[in-house]
Length: 489
Picture 1: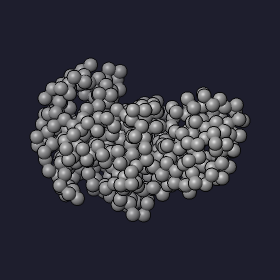
Picture 2: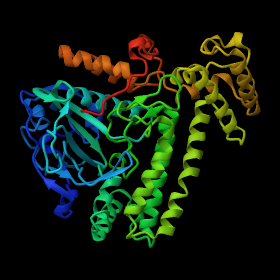
Picture 3: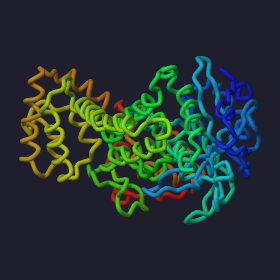
């Protein structure tokens, strides 16, 4: 394991032309204090967890001191926000400290959010608030534990610094990690300023760093776009299957390597509702839960347009046309696993659709239903009281149960083995917004960070029973139902 000062930096992005970034150092937080530290993320860069006990740890991740070998910069990008192109974005409140290589050669960006003003901050202060950093810290780790590609979170540093949002809040920084923070909007930035040479240069850089198998291929740009389409489609299938709504799927929030990135007004769906929209400023539901796959394809079309100088329109269209099949097949495969089905059959699509139709009418808790479904043994309601009690329309769910039992019998499903497999993919615990809100209130009002650490402990093992924490699997109380979240952070 390494001390912070011994981390091995390899700042490849810094070697691109200066039009790709703004060299800038973090602005230090006033009176910084450690809020939480994630040793699991630290292990990805071989960081000795004992480093968190040293005063230098807080100094390095609150902007007071630069890590030796780091070369901080703010990344340039633009993007379509709520369907409208915005040429004035970039890293306005985050700084890439540098890129660390671990012992096995993997490269991780160290990205410090809330680190102060940059060239791209516009009129804003470049800060993050404790509330938003807690939400991102918890959700990125929860999403990771659910087997979904995502950025990771190393730590949160709080402060006494006052930041003005809807109200006065406390400023904070969070160290985010990812294989890269390049977005669809990174390519749009150079396409819309008529710099095709930089589009090509960025594509070559991304391929070299993150798609090395394409180096030397005659059609490498086409194959690159195909890979991005595939990764994005599979990411959407994961989001939909676990009931996750991102909230702000702008092209500048879409990772070029298919990661979940930029956690803001997200939410895990509780009552099954395809129109679920966690963002309180998304008045027309553009980024509703049900719209996410279509929006992802819309965003991929904008990426393809930005790559138009290196990929022909016909070839780009070929790549884009693969999205729907990849998404559909991935989604059905994910849902089949949630249903405990070992094989795939044409009738599975109707079985899934039929269940979701009943669930939306009955407003059934999405996560809890699938967790309890692993106990299913018979379409007889008397033998499945835990499931039956979730529905008012007993006949409707009963009819579906008959079809489900028939489908299980067709593959000689074993009840014990099926339950074991289903409990590995249907979480008992998700980051419900009311749980995050409880942790935030304790942290903000009482400087008590214990609930953050407890939630992290529970959510990093979401498929285990952890019966001592049963209350954390409960549906929300009345005050916590259908919470919507502000974009401000």
